Image (cartoon, rainbow over all chains, first blue to last red; front, side, top):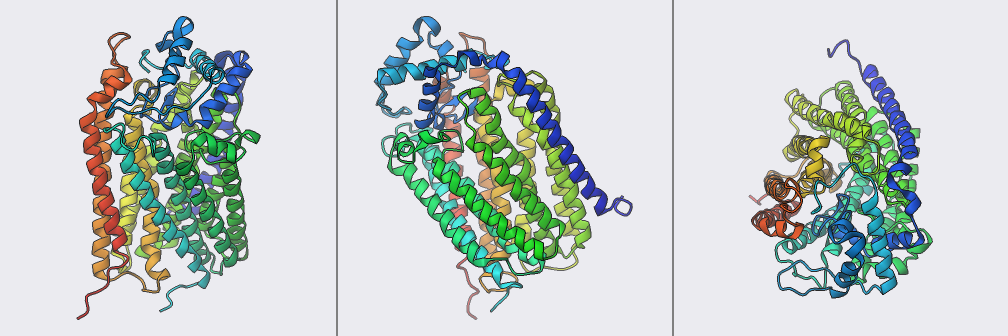
Length: 146
Length: 461
């Protein structure tokens, strides 16, 4: 093998293979982005959802929580927290109470800071979490606990 | 004593030193976080977990980048057989990058994150607050400028010099690193699209172009320490990185299982990412084979140990621990659990932290004018550092894996109503987190031993 298989052949496999599979990734990405509107329900992105996403980002929520499995694993998954904590009927009331009760100051317990959000901001963040929970993500997580 | 072939290689030295300083910071913040996992309110007011984590992961990324840059400045001139195009530019960029890095970390630590976002005008081009891409937009722009200057400097050097496979692969990897980082500036309001293209930075870095960088550095060190024919080493370098990209590019699909994306990704992602261990396994065979076929006895035994170690640990961390949870039906239960954390720790240490320490181990004695290798006593201490850190990382990974398996068992597998909540589950994992923290302390001791080896001298007779 080492005699007949030359460096030039190896180089060609490298260049040819990577270009081919990069193009495959791009083609599949093109197809995926065409399909995604059916699943992410982007028609539901209101200004409130947009503001909520911005609040999610500038408070670095992903530094403790995960969102659909990505982020930190220090605090609960929030991609489906809307479902877990009451849904349409009860989530917003729960969420407002929760945010305002922080920090809980229970000795030894992991502590969430208070981010001093006003009512409008808490509502925007809730809308963002509702939007995330309503995306079709192929049935993940396995149960409501996230 | 001057032991450099090309004087401009000396610019690598501050890059390596600064990388090691940041490495210490990374581990200290890792220990703070590890403690917060079990003593939840430890430093909760001063350094909330999210801040410690940002510092921990960002320091890692930045010190690896410093290490890659130092490696490039060291090996490109020697491979190209010419002086670096502009040593002055390399030094200026060092200070720019170091200042930007320090200011960013201080920003994380000294003001609330939302204040940092305001101060740096995040609203003009919002890019902050996404995992690993927490840097203020202005820092990200700085990174792009530093990367462009760096690539210009290397490109001009290679253009006027010899174009070896190692140089071309390294340069391709570094260009890919810069190009894919540009996706960090794309942050649409649609969280699904945001996440999809976020992976173009994160995955295509660590499971794509960074493997080219790792492969090139490893090949360079293997040529130097074994004296095996360049043709042979470069041929296998091409084979390995070809496998890495052929599997890794569509392997991106293992991040698209649960993301408002078509189901076909569960097949494509599973098949291609199941093959991702192959290049790492090939790297193990290759490293051991070359060392066994060595034509010289290089006095730097420590560098050889690092080169073999990085291949083995990258295979275990990235290959085996990646495979553990990459198949879609498995990932359905393990996604975003402590198993992910276990994999992340060993993969980053094995593939990237260790490759940087490999090149530092090889290059530092020359950069410091000591010669081909440090004295025997220093190498023994360095190897203590190697074994303490590596064994500690194996245990960190095993404890986190234990925690992850139990977490999946309690929280993910049962039906609604029977599954434990996240926080209730975490309480059950305490013993694993304590053991992980102890292993983390051992890792820190290993790091101290490693750093101490730079000051160890031969006993005066």
